[in-house]
Image (cartoon, rainbow, N blue to C red; front, side):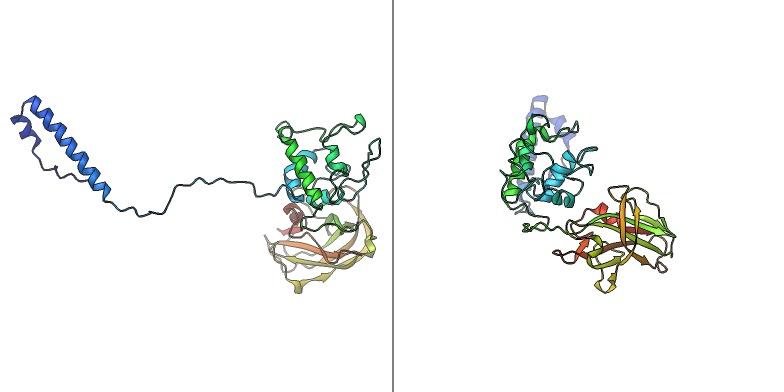
Length: 328
């Protein structure tokens, strides 16, 4: 700020005034400058008169009373540990889908002595479901309280009561799936057990188990799919089609093609080293150049579930990459 006193001859004033007079003058000068600055500043218009300081608090977007939230916050980090519920035995907590299908209306393996709990999750009946009971009680006094082991950094011990309450809330609300549907009968849609991309009968390589398969630019190959279903024989599944896209979120319905049934093959899968593959599709990659990534999905129906898509919009992203091919 420019002062109105910038042209004053201070040296001349000092020569004419004694030390005491100089001190009085200096104090008066400082007072005038301060007052002048305050007055000038008070006349400045605030360009943002309506803006207020705010504190932004970021929160998790998961609803932890849904199957997606329970999987993200509880089942996957706490229960799907190596050697536990990671596909070695049910319930299978590796994915949202496997968690749901191995919990809801599924029979228990270990029963309590009184036989009071025969089903893992009974929709709208948390008190009769084994899942919350196992989180609070040592089954028969020799099976331990679930989870049996935890990672050293786990916060579960101090958050246990809230997780039990969330599990109860989800069950009592109908044990809804990821689309908000309450199960009515036990007939779950087909499940994907594995995808193999074969070229001349040999599986194409992947950088890691859940990564894309790698093919040479312009080459052809066959995609083989291993499926399971709780009530329908795999060969009796209907409306089996396949689609592909360079965008995992956008598929053109006009490109839908029928899957074929071939001679059963036994190959490694997504969760197991021994899966039966029956459905396949021969893909023509002549138009695919280097660095193209093609994302595949299949649609299939059983007796009750019509046109079920795998992977779908609610599938974990690793399942989408597992079903994709990159051209090198």
